[in-house]
Length: 170
Image (cartoon, rainbow, N blue to C red; front, side, top):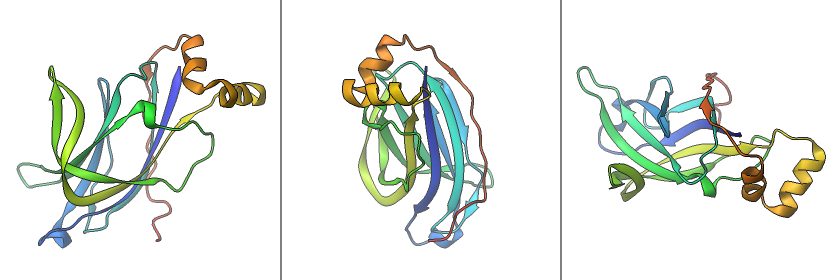
C-alpha cells in the first residue's frame, strides 16, 4: 500500500472580483473526493492535510479550486498531478506551486490532464510516505521506489484526514 499525503496550503487567485471569492479545494483520487473548508479572499490559506491509501500509481490526482456560490459553485481552475511525479518522503516540505487550468482533458470519460492556464496557482505539498524502516528507505532510494512498491503488491483504500488552521503566515 502507498500512502499519499497532501497538504493544501494556499492559493493566489486573480480577477476583478477576487476579493469577494469564498473558495475551497477538492482533491480527487480514483473514486475518492476530499474537500477543504471555504476561505475568503484572493489569497486563501487552508493548511489542511489529507491522506490517501492507494495501490494504483498509473493514475493521477485531480485538484479543483471552486468558488462557493449562493446557489451554484463555480470552478476557478483545475490541475492534474500524475502520481508518478510525486516524490517519496517522510518529511513535510514547503510545497510546490501548481498553475491552475481552465479545462480538464478527458480520454474515455477519465481525466488525464488539464489545459488552458487561468493565471491562478495553488501551493500543495504532495508526497508518498515511506512506512518502512531505515533499511527499506535506503533500499527504496537505491532501487527506485516504484519498483519497490510493485514488489510489495499494494492494496488500496482511502482514509482522509483534515486538520485546518495552521501555518498561514507568508
